[in-house]
Image (cartoon, rainbow, N blue to C red; front, side, top):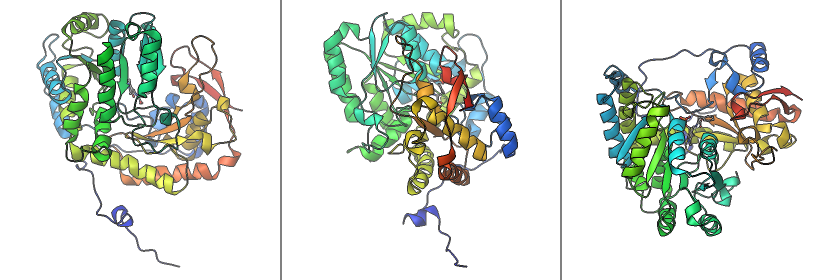
Length: 470
Ligand code: P71
């Protein structure tokens, strides 16, 4: 038997290894049920990973949303909750943290990201207006549409091609944006909706040069620019890594500059900001803030809690500060990249370059024999669960929903299954187990058939839809 000399990851790449900038103080046991039990659980869940019980899941890569491990400082902060109905001291800590790290003047807490999306959409969109954005996100677009807006995708074409290696696949195509303004008139554009990074494109970043150019174009036409800041910290990492002139700037500094080109932002704090629940909305304009501050009491709660407990706001204020630390972001994205590099090496089709929060399997190339109307990405999520109890998420035709006018499926170019990595939760060994399971499903791909949808809810159908094997 040949004896292989074990090498660390760093040695394999000819460099010194890096490690997470924390150690583990508390653990949560994992359980893996048998293949027969998984088969039963999957049928019961209608082949939809959203409908599985988490007790039946081994490694949970459904989402990075609300699944982070909080730090000891955040947990200590939870004990300092000031649960006053009005004017909680934790609100002022949160307000200060958002002002300091994102640079906006007015801050409102919300129960999570979509609460903030709802408010900004209601206040900033007049029925019939257009909302250009760098690729849709499910909840963002729905709130824009519920407010009477029409979403228009103005992301660069490269974003729709999983094999294109453009370093900033989240960039806005300025010609597309310019043409829209020309066509409908600046007065009919509610605002530009810019997300950094772009979730549905594979966690792809926007460059600083691009946000500056978008800001200039908006300024020339008197159009506002709002950010989806959900994963803007991860976006800043890519700017630091890839954009000339930013290698020596801190992540915190890059985030602040990026925000300075915008009029405000909504935030799902369940991602970058390292909390299990929470969000915020921040704007600079006084009048717009007055309107939002009034509307929030209808839907979320008083403007000093917005649906959060005092303790939640304290954990969030501390989470914001921890989230912009360079060593944290480097190790977080390093872990995602590690999984992506393993799969790339093994010839498994994934979205390139590997993004910030997840590795996206390209289900079209993974299962070339399954037509899009038979839900290849949903099928892949189901097969991965069957193989090893790993839970992933469909981001393809089921997520894209139906065209509001024709009623037909939207058929996105990207048919992806997302392996989303929670922050500070899993180790490199978990990543190895995940990679081996993806490989096993890939090896057996020829015999895998597609799915048929048997139940379809009206809104955001992917959450509760049910499927069966064809
Ligand atoms: C994710 C989520 C959570 C989610 C939402 C919808 C379907 C499936 C899973 C949420 C985001 C997001 C961006 C860029 C706003 C929200 C809404 N992402 N913008 O990726 O990624 O935030 O969940 O706190 O309401 O799993 P919210």
